[in-house]
Image (cartoon, rainbow, N blue to C red; front, top):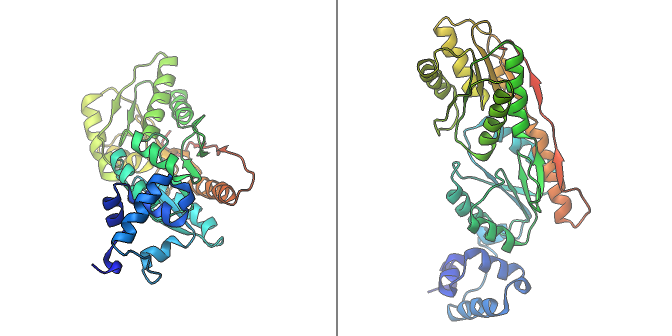
Length: 330
């Protein structure tokens, strides 16, 4: 077999290690355990493997890259996050390698392993809770890692985001302050951020002596999903007079269903969304929402990550606060 046809995955399989380990051996052999390095070197010698400088995949490993792992390509909030990231990487001469994991932790695990195989200089993750194998990958990689869109403590990683629990708590209290008593929470994928918002909602409802209620479809949020959830909520909670949605596109669907059913907003139904997306600003009436700084989160996290890569002193955690917008649905 000619060496050009041998891939890093082939070497990894023959040596009984991961592709990430082989890639790390090629770049920084001193960071690989001696017995593992010897085994990889032996396999390469047996198959006459030599890195091909004309191979685009290998050549890309020589270029400074930042890996970015997002849960969905179909959600506007991550488009804004990526715009913030690339506002820093592009002028600094870094490329971004962006993959998605469809809100699946095992899929995230696979994608992180794949991205690490390209010898990225750093990683930006949108989750703060990972599988045990993912944690091992991140630890073994030995590169700076940033976790964004939420706040956690004690992770040992760069952390830039906002308090999802507090945001859910504060917006629920705004609904209550507007006179709403039977407020229902409409979730989406039950990811960690969604769950924290729901827990904040539950705390506010309990503090006010009110009964909580929830719909969680485990679907990526969209206007059509919001419309369907509102129709279901009307059957399950006929007395409801307020709704808190985990995303503005859900809230836009809820508003659409209310208008179609001649439910007066906000007199009969208060509606609050999340993230302050453009779709909620062009509805009539304009959606109340928790406005989150996605672009700034991406920008600040990347600035810190690049400083860490370049061994410059920096802070580890930044809280970029949300704000509440009352719009016309509250």
